[in-house]
Length: 266
Picture 1 (cartoon, rainbow, N blue to C red):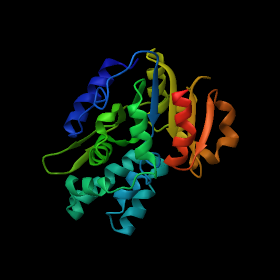
Picture 2 (tube, rainbow, N blue to C red; picture 1 turned 120 degrees about the horizontal axis):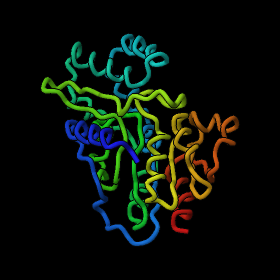
Picture 3 (cartoon, helix red, strand yellow; picture 1 turned 90 degrees about the vertical axis):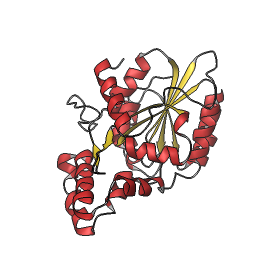
């Protein structure tokens, strides 16, 4: 299980962001019997675009390109922090304008239907494990009226300051995992959920290499759902043997529904 201090830290900062931390699904009551966890990435898995790159488009192209040079050395969280700082300080773009852009990000085709179908299953808990942030995810989920379908969201907390500037903070500071950024090890999050003993089966849906860290924690009874045409799928040849679980690949939510839902119902 997670250390209490981390969860309390996350809950407090999460409230500051204005994103209500949902503890239980509101669409249905949990049914008896073994539970299934469906864990999902956010960028390029639920939403079609990378939310950090989308927000960075609010900057002039020259500034944006200069900041993108930070990513290999400093990581995506530092990149986003600098983007938000410049947007507010130099371009008078506040959190409300950022939120408006994020709410308009298109969903992966068919993915909203997949989320709603999974949430209707009485044995399924849905959660998000994402290197985005609580403000972006919360704005988007509320826009599509699906926030309460998720029992947990594990991401970098964000808070809106009195000036209107959006501040993004790290979920954690870790140095034990080289697959994930220092601010969030997805594998550690998923391992904690598995070790809690709540879930007989786990499904993990993602597209990038830090999702590989989470998928490596899956067991033989679990399922990794890897999006075709994206980073992780291109590295399956090199890393496929690292996975003990079943693997299915998908291109959009329509195909994911066709391939995954029978496994959940079975």
